[in-house]
Image 1 (cartoon, helix red, strand yellow):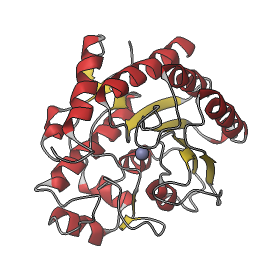
Image 2 (image 1 turned 180 degrees about the vertical axis):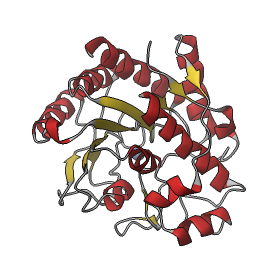
Image 3 (image 1 turned 135 degrees about the vertical axis):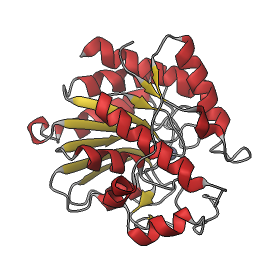
Image 4 (image 1 turned 45 degrees about the horizontal axis):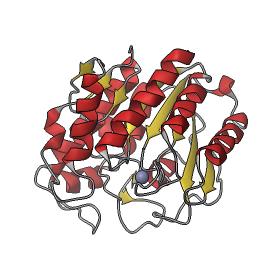
Length: 282
Ligand SMILES: [Zn+2]
């Protein structure tokens, strides 16, 4: 496997009792190591990197652990955990790798909760937005997490260099993404729609973007679409394999950043299924 996995055990140090817990990523890493993937350790993102995607006041408050909501606790040192996860996304962007760091990011907007959502949905910094802004190239963000990436949509609103495409379950948290707006093209799907309906929708989504308009594909890779997970769309390993193949078909510099996916065993297998198909098809 050529795709490098970006990971540091440091990301296991918070949130033991939360649904977004260390085990989901610890087990993922174990599976991918067993399959022979090469691992790279990330560095923390710089404050300049964070400020390209977030407002100064939000970063200031996060640093002091002063931001909290019912989904997204103010853990001790959460700023450092989040900064390392954002650094993982940046490294993935640079090397064309797959960051499996936590916390996830796509619900976090410029100032925290985005587009009218009440919480930040387990997210503290928008990792994929920070990485895309770090590269600063025309980019297609493909968000395959089962939830709509309201934070990412908000951060790139009106940005002519970036197109955001999301497939997600609706109705569901965070309640956004029911229609397309400007550079955000949204595809709400019904619960447990299954591989076939999902892939048909993905093909439709990719047919409306012009590959000549971008140089980079950034995948917000959430696996909570897996059958039985938090935002299940009834997907199986076969579905993730086909997603990998379609992403490869875009023939661009591509990187992946883990979002949701709450069952480590499935995450590991689904990541391998999509990455292997991606590599076999490029
Ligand atoms: Zn999700």
